[in-house]
Image 1 (cartoon, rainbow, N blue to C red):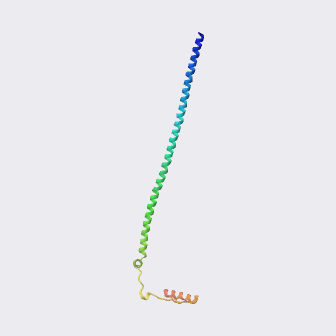
Image 2 (cartoon, rainbow, N blue to C red; image 1 turned 90 degrees about the horizontal axis):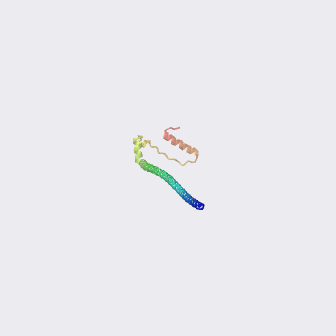
Image 3 (cartoon, helix red, strand yellow; image 1 turned 90 degrees about the vertical axis):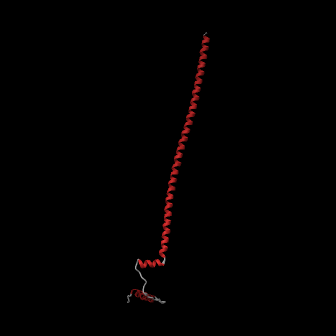
Length: 150
């Protein structure tokens, strides 16, 4: 009977050990699965963070590009306006260059008139041989123009 009790205790111990091993194996498997799930969750979170950071970086660059495009449009508008102003000024210069306009401006704004026949002085320059002669021509021209004679 003692042997039967020992055999029963031994078989109970084996069952308990087997049950403990099964429970331990299940816990190990659960720990492995939970570690895998934790690692997988960490990878997903890291991927989400990287995706969000990339999206923010891309959007900030698009914002910079949009701001630069707006600035380019403003500068283009200024250039077009400057070209229009330049064309207007060139046309105005061409109008002013005309001799009729110059005469009209001189007569109207400055009060200038054409000289009369007795006011016009004609002179001719002779071919001179030396500096003394040239100096005399200059003084003659000067005295003719100013009316001052030495």
